[in-house]
Image (cartoon, rainbow, N blue to C red):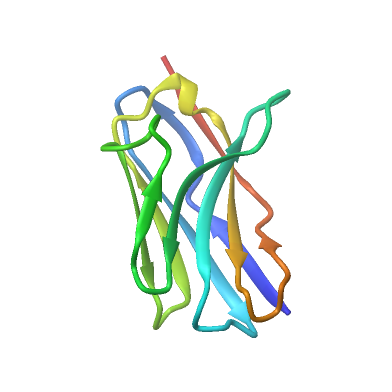
Length: 117
């Protein structure tokens, strides 16, 4: 019912920046939470940042003051601006849509971010 298409991943040197985008389509309820998670090989999938439909945000301590999550509700798109990237940021990044209306989560396909030292 909801589809998420991610873009913006790639290879970047330490200290560089990337901007990830997640475009949502389908039956999107206005009350929702959009999040970015990341998962490195052999590791669990961890929350990076989330933003509510009201604009409230939360960040992992490891990315606080470096990453910024934002959303454009008119375009149904969520962004993750990643600055001062570190090699430990290397992971597959996933967009997630949650709403209490449908009771089901939707995940994007993932986009790879690789940070070289």
